[in-house]
Image 1 (cartoon, rainbow, N blue to C red):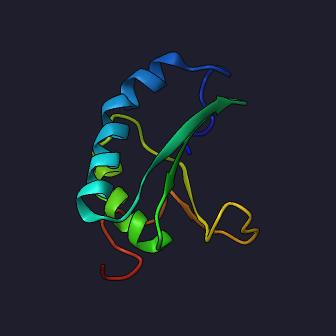
Image 2 (tube, one colour):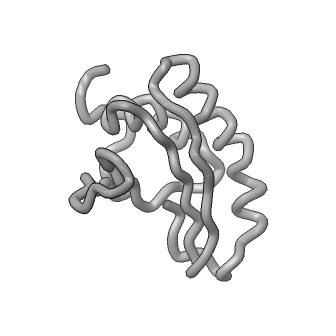
Image 3 (cartoon, one colour):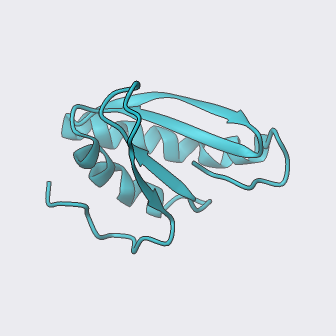
Length: 103
């Protein structure tokens, strides 16, 4: 998630993150760890969705890509399926480059 944007629909943010989204999808594909599922804009938030068999492994592949993004992410939710009601929530204050566990 990229939260607290200055406007409800931030087209500049979408444009700035396009290369990052594509690089993230490629990183997951190269690792056989998942794929991009889409994005959503609204309520001053831009959200990206990725799917993988193992949420922690998926994030370990995505985190280095998002560390290089032109905009800092604010929150990540790791879920075991779309219906999962107790995600692991990571905030941007988490020290970058430190995996949740070794891949």
